[in-house]
Length: 508
Image 1 (cartoon, rainbow, N blue to C red):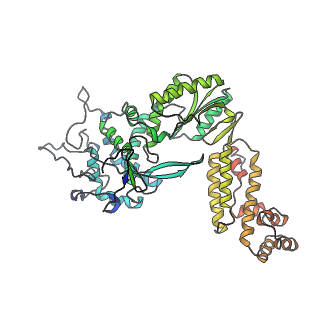
Image 2: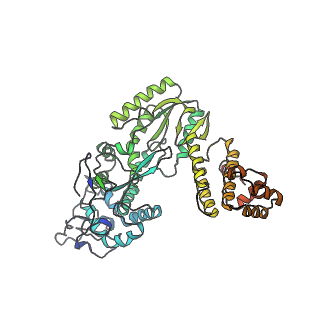
Image 3: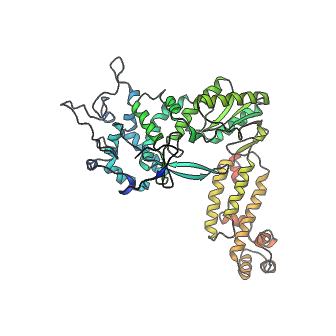
């Protein structure tokens, strides 16, 4: 695939074969994707090195042998004492049978959309059974070329869209295998204030950390926003940090090929000279590796802070101290890590005036942000819209799905006051949907009387010309469509969800 300048683009060329991958005839070898046999690289005409001489150890795969020889036939590295250094054989660990099996389980569980080759995940095993030996050999030969990622836009929780790069299933598998080997190397050295994409940690832990510092008296926040972090990462800066702990140069080169794989936007291919595409299994780890230097700098200065991916906030005790920290951190990010700070969104403010990961703080209490609450109500209005022509069963299912997800994240809010009113509003919205669905006067009267409403009351409301929203709060609709009846239909209570989070022992 031709290389392009970043300021130029061209139509992405169509591939004549299925899944946009061309292989030479030699790749039609027997063996499964986890087997040790070597083949020919994907998209290349190079052949695997032949075994030279009678030495049976040459050409063996170290992951399937006790001696640490690479597939090309030579030793990859030796310590001065003559013993093999396991840090020099990360690629063998990455492509080992056990590691690939675990990687495939995770990729399959996550599902995901097809990449630029349009290969669905359900078709991958059949493809890999035939072609994996060739692909594996090309990786060892440093000739593997990943496919470019497919660019899609997804809505952000804070509004707007976030560019997401979708790798092919094959590249997701390889990236996941790389991440599984590198995470144990890097993660133990990460800061305790880093909570993003780490096992056993969540955004809630980062929010609780901020609350802890607020309770200690750190009431001024340095809210520093990185402008398009994942699109502006300098590859050289990132790889220099990765290379401090990764001694296998083949792995470094493989990671570099993924960073430079390119991106397809629409039908055009663009070169990627900067950035780490969001969407791949490897991107979260790479972002943490780069920003770990920021964490260490802040720890060295004795600052209180919490970071989740590229979102971080520093807590200080005075505005003057906050302004000094903002200036010094900005210099560090721009000069040392070559990142850009968004001056318009960055600020030094009281903790009551900031949002972090969708949450705000009232005193030392956590609450969901106003923007998050507005988006929540907008989504509920969409799900309970009168013009949405779906069955009430399906509507209830989608409502329950959204409420569980939203409260699962924002339910840690310690502000109880809006909860009962929110439940009241939600029930009224659902009653309005039923009223609209019943449509005809006689149907409304029949359904209300069926539910226990007095006939005279049902008739007076059923014949009314007032709108569904107005009639959804009448005595007739409340006496028929009771709270318990709505619950029996599948409507979840926001209050019950909140109580279950904060007081699980007493939850109803």
